[in-house]
Length: 245
Image (cartoon, rainbow, N blue to C red; front, side, top):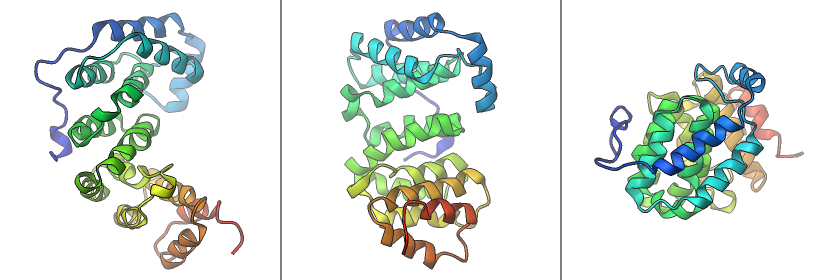
């Protein structure tokens, strides 16, 4: 796996699906709401402007466009994701890139070979609304499908100098339910236990809270064993779903 600072190059010679990209951009323009856009940008603290398209309308648009365009191969899929992401003029285009990345027909493309693309999105996204869907919806399933290759990558990201790669390592198992690897979760949390960044402390609490739906005893034990280093925020979040005991 290449280091994050080398993950910005796309597939050589590949071209994005111009029709899909145009339909996404034209559709977002048609749904634009300048008043909502200003509020969305303020909420996200985003330098990149919004079109002002609400999430339900985004999902409807993306689903319709994806249904009408079939990406012929991996290279076209990746180039299309990168075009929408890297050349986005509005934040919703990056949401569209994630929709293409995570689309069901391209499930087999989300494998170890796709990790440079997904790492690029995490590092350049650098905010929760862009990072978390990639981490949980795409990277998590890829790790579970390719554990021998990708568990070591998550362990490496857990100690990364990049906050968002660390956060991804911590939360990528959210929603994994019975497939949660608690040893890997512990390994991914450990390097960030003493860190003070809100987005890491919140991530730790979130990952533990999600696991508590299935295994509250493990979470209680983890919190007890790490109470001297676990932040108050992480501890409170972790125990929300544990109930009495």
